[in-house]
Image (cartoon, rainbow, N blue to C red; front, side, top):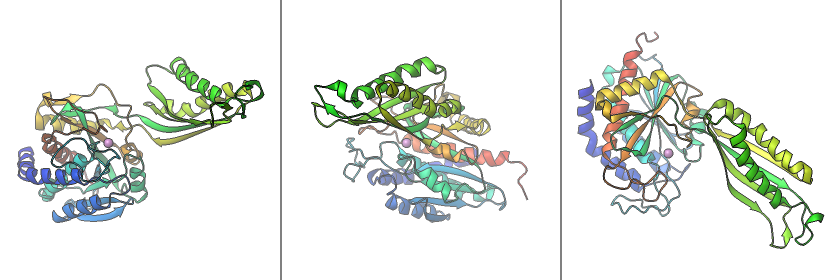
Length: 397
Ligand code: NI
């Protein structure tokens, strides 16, 4: 089967490069993937799958029916959105949309999703179960997965597979991680409310800027003293808003940040912990405060059995020296985790690095991918799906 899969992948690879170039040159921002969705629906329809558009606002869902109609579904999820970054690659297929760029490789993900659909469509008679292809919008804003789930894409899905490109892994290599792959990411807003006054008479006012400065430094110091260092947590205040004039004491300051953690228990404790610290700083000086803690996405926790299927499939396809077991998770976030609340799943890393030149990071205006990765991604995904169905010995009647 593997040699057949590789042969089909080789046959469709020129078409996949074409698809990738088209997607890369036509990037669309999160929630506005209308043309991308229409294009994706066109490609899947052309290989005989039924595509449903405008699922989860601008998403697409397509199904490849298995020979055993009642079997639960395996979902393959890819994301389609680009970023508000002006591209600086000088590639012939660079973005033709001013200020928008596929700088996170979601164009590669979409291409791999399409390639896997094209490939498995040729093997349809040999797949017992139904494969559902989820082309998700708005991953960058952590909204798309929720939109898709609310529209029912996870109904009757028994397992889900996903991938993300990685520039520090060599093009065509695969990275596998058991357990936590990415962090939980939460939004933090702290408002310090003091009292305005003359800059020369601070004792008559309540200085919100001075208090906010203490909140920022204390949070950073306290986090290293009160949390288990073996359970990573990062708190970044990325924006401070406040004050009106150099000689006027600020009455209000807003601190905006992001909080990342890997262990669900740590994530659970954080809102109350932050509030306790902010309260303790404000109280002696008579300032008021508000802490708004918004959970955005949980950590991606890869399912062991499914990760094993992908690892074994990748090793069989490419040899063990091209498959790395990743020792470290990332503190980045990925809304793939929301699907994992509905069904077990796993996400692998697809290397897109070049051996002989600078590999710019994700979200960089010069980020480029090694196109050799496309076929690797498609074969790995398709073979893993095939192996998944092989292992579902007793499908329900
Ligand atoms: Ni991404």
